[in-house]
Length: 297
Length: 279
Image 1: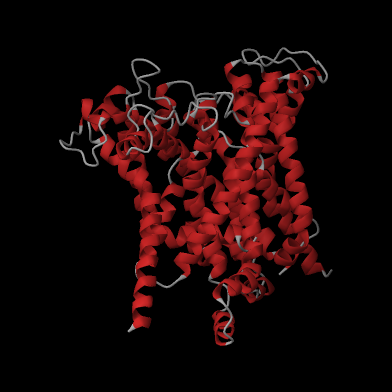
Image 2: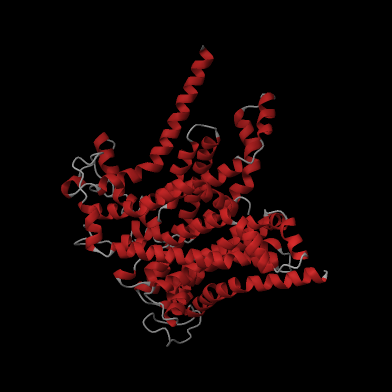
């Protein structure tokens, strides 16, 4: 390393200093404090006085069936919504990838659900799901498919699927746009060559297109999975935290803020953090070769 | 003849698919607009059009709660968050994108990791921090807490944009004795315009839509942001939500976002794909 390179490396640290300081202060410190709180009996009304209780909160947590229900709900929601979003998103991307007049309009139309606040989409769907006056029940009853109104968000057998449906509606555009961007990077000549050779379109898709866009799809999948694991807004509004849909984030916040039990709530938060960290670490390790290549140019 | 008929059929099928996609994505908005224009008992009948359009829901939104103030809060918080994130991220992205130094990759992955961890994981620690700083029920408290979401991904996306600029750019200037700061302000910033717009838009939308922190760190109606205000609109009882008003409020905040998307869709897509596909 020459003197110039060394000087540049030193400069790099100076340029990183502000962001690093901010992140340590607003991410690192609160995270450590939350983990610390999980070992205490801290109470929201008075965060200064608390005593150390060891792993008591975690033991209590592991004995609460509602907690395990919310873990199960979160995992089910994550797998169901991400799988549907990938399939639907890829389908929409394939359609948008065909040159057609007004593609810009289409792209804007699929972007809009992504851009609006989750709270707004939750409210709009909550109104459509309304058991008495909602448009879904009125339409289905009007056509005669159902005789009785369905309690979409209250029926424990349906409510989690109702949540998945809203998330799929809101987030498929994100997946579709990422898939579309990847599709547009596939060289046209490949298709031409395959078509000249008389390869069936379905075979072209599975043999050429899919392998080429796989890395982008995997990245989208990871982003979506980590996002789905922390789901809060949608469930908070749509089913106001009934046990049959409660997610880990909703559970943690309820104990932290509504029941003011900071110690116990922090234990739930810490559990969720550990789960996400584990998944992230696994993914980063697996994807490291790919990432390293990208970042090093 | 037969061939062209088959082709026509395919065409029709194709446009049918497009129509289904459009209906799927747009119907909830259509229904929100229609519902927001119905008042009284009309709301409870599923007419596809408001027979007798009424604006009363729209005026009620502003009368029943400080919704104007809530919109202003959201604008202030989101703008401040974007400005602060971009300011910090440009220098960090310069270091990550243009200089090779030991520990760059692990550090960059740490930034990426922070953007992925669940907000609820820092909730109690952040609550304590915000109280200690005296920023509870204060818009500044929201700006501070939002940085945890926006800063890592602005750094990430800007780093990727920075890397794509040709390497010769700063070499000559640095050899001629320019400082790194001059290189950033005189060479990169002018070129980074589009990237800053893309990243800034993403950060703005993220901050505008944030709910968990805004719900937890504000107390009074005057300090709420738009998502919290809409989430907490309530009627005479828990079972009688004023749906007309809720839909009106939803339409009000959706319209500017729709305009933003229509005007900047290329920029938004560029930012989204830079952050994910190339990552």
